[in-house]
Image 1 (tube, rainbow, N blue to C red):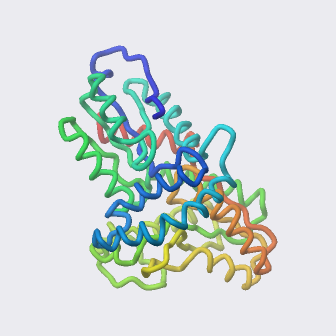
Image 2 (cartoon, rainbow, N blue to C red):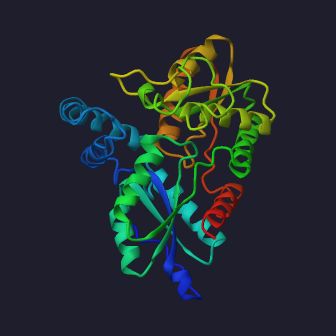
Length: 343
């Protein structure tokens, strides 16, 4: 496990407080065994594959784990760096930057799945005398399969500690402006005629408990009392805010990374990039505002596979908009949110 980032503390209060940035996780290596271990933990979570336990076990053991690790390992190999996983490297950079912004408390990294795992991180902090944790789920929009499972796990592990949580930040000006800056720079450099906002998908059934209206392929209405907690509606609200902040005139929204065997929220990114090329869009930029750190889903799924599909359908270039990663405006927003929720 990567050791938490240390910080010299000038008071006993500082030693008792820590900020835990939690992202989804990454395999330890781009190999079939490492990917299989990671997928078994990730997809074995009942909040991720929310099917009855026997069905989930059969799906994992008979369909997913015998075949998908090889394909996924190949995908990871396309984006792995000499220093390691891009998600890990970007997450570590975020921790280091936030530590600089919050010198009065320790900032550490944990992953919901894989390493550095939540159980080990919480145990180490507890052993060192930390008694207050500020949890920062690194998912801008709320979903049960991301923030929900993260908070449930941390509550199991740290029930004896004082916990505060930084809520979903999809509408925070600092996040929106950091995303908009990346979009503006990418559009200016690439000459993109259209920006597609691509978000991680979810099975449609996971929206039904929280959304007040039937889901349709059309864009969600503005956030209000009935849909404020709906992941899809939050995604459309994020797109609208970034579009306005970046001054875009041509933009749309789609959802990626779906699995077979269920109805997922739409429209689908792999179909959207082809449709845009067939409509005559030659230069496309794709931003992924549900990911705050570039990872497999941005670098390989969009930057490589979606780019190939776009060109095969008649487009000239698809440019990936970088995630906010450790952009100063984003880190400042996180620091402000930590102070606001845990002064």
